[in-house]
Length: 554
Ligand code: F6P
Image 1 (cartoon, rainbow, N blue to C red):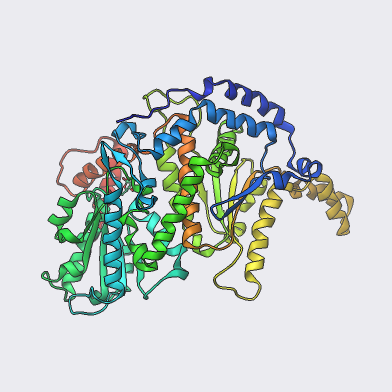
Image 2 (image 1 turned 90 degrees about the horizontal axis):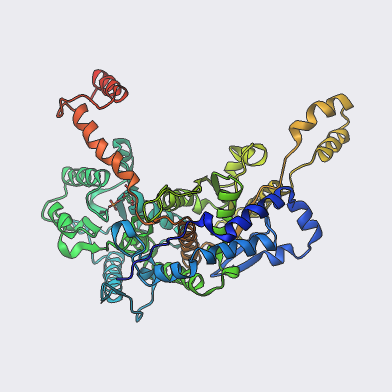
């Protein structure tokens, strides 16, 4: 099997050097001036693909910046890397496998050999299996232990087996069909378990245990608690199969848990957890929105894949967003990136992007094990607007850090209330405008004088009113959030993250960093519960164990 690895240290490339020099020239670049002197800037720096309109004109860029960034992408071997990803080469070098979430979105009839075997028939067989169960639940053929209709689905899963499906089922709430409600149980926190189950009727609830490995502590503990909850409320062992199904690549473990084998939906080691919402891990979503909408989601993702594969870099949205991120992270020292969706239904998008981006690109060694020579993935944060405006946007406008931001907003709301949506849209635009324009000292002073203030007062206050401006942002506009456009939007960010990993030479598809905490968690648990008499490896942890043991009640 072809094995993809980018052997190039990006900082040694000619275009890296050229970009470093160009950065110095851009020190005094003013977006205000750029807009004032080039009336075509917005037209030049905006385009549409797959139902997404991107305005990237409010960035610290000119034609030369872009040309150098695209050269960097080419010199980094991005063309070959995109081909390697989409054609199933082993891009996940530390786990010796491909990363084929894109295969899940490919149409029937496509062929894609992995290790000599075409995986597409199996992908479409599982889509058929999903279609079957969704149909049976929606038409009341699948019922609870005492023949009542299933009305509530609880996804028990964490990380990628939670965040992606939750994002999609919330974002597509207006597309809910047959009154099936989705709930998510992720954390190993009894309070979450209580809150979720309090809303449920055991007779009408289906639990989906979603775990690629079927070995994740939080998920298994919640699955056991859910089974006990079901049995304690009248559910029977004999009919348990009507209330518990699983999605996993570890079919044996699911069957051992008590799930009927034909109710286990497979997934594959070539799908990473954070890229798995397109697989049967998306089953809760499919149950909520129906299979035809779920297929629309897949086709939106596929449209973005085709764009990513075929569009020249100059018009390639994931490549462009990724290279802008490289520009700010590596040449302007930006350490964080904000996502600011102006849409209630996208309120959890940031959580999904946090896992997608930070678990993928939070790495410090290159694929060949050598240390990286430049900054890699930034901290991803943000939240829904306008709420953020009344909380943390102050720092975006006047803080000492440069924080590139992505605004995301639909043109049409599913729930028009008076002129709320016009105001929401206007606020989104005015935030990026304020970040770009800022307010000069002269403007601040003039404003204060216009209010009739004394010159002393004007001079005392003016500095506080100055907004530096020149802060970069992208704005993504969608006509409405529907399955197809949402699919394209999620795939856009998946590919953006991949492009950056190629530039930095890191593996976007492993996550060894989370393993140490899991291992230590088991040891600390043993020490806390007295199963392990050895003291903790450090005094702080031991002290915290003692504190717990001396005060814990129940
Ligand atoms: O701990 C991190 C992680 O491995 C994620 O990558 C993954 O999405 C999550 O845990 C859940 O894993 P699983 O689906 O195997 O339960």
